[in-house]
Image (cartoon, rainbow, N blue to C red):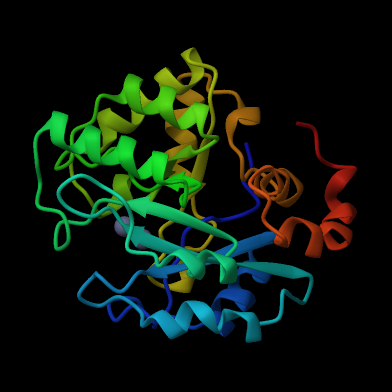
Length: 256
Ligand SMILES: [Zn+2]
Ligand SMILES: [Zn+2]
């Protein structure tokens, strides 16, 4: 199983991350990835990027050295009932949004509260990915969340950093999510959640878990660039069209 795009990475625009766009392009190329995504924290996080960061990503070339970069955001699910810290017009500048619980923005809460907040966030219609949903600080009724996500064409993220150094205790939840996704006929994205470019495209632990339960590769929306762009096209994101010609070089090798 090889995952050739990454849907989750932070740059120096989030203070607790340490690489630039330039670093990511270089390392993504060295690793043989097709595409990566910059998804810095929305401004409600104490070290989130300023709104202008998101509005001005259009100055970054779409493709450098045959590596494409998507313009994303990791937005915050807001207390107490959900919804994201993304002003309505901002999504016009972005290719997709990840919706995540973060402790400095949303205090850890019980399952009913967290589930309600996620369901309302999905209903709001701004996010395409639910970020690190395995975090034990924000317990969820996974079956209910997956059904709602599927109805809205939102995927759940399997976050490789949750297995290595963040959100301790996520592992059994992520395993459970993978099993439920397969049973309920839905999809996931794999994100490295890199805070330094060296880990872009690193999904070792996520792949290990997927393989251990026989999770089918076709349920991973970002396994390759054409497939992830097709997913964004379903959300009417113009980037799918902008990168269509570039992505066609990979179509031959792609089975969905
Ligand atoms: Zn996060
Ligand atoms: Zn992140």
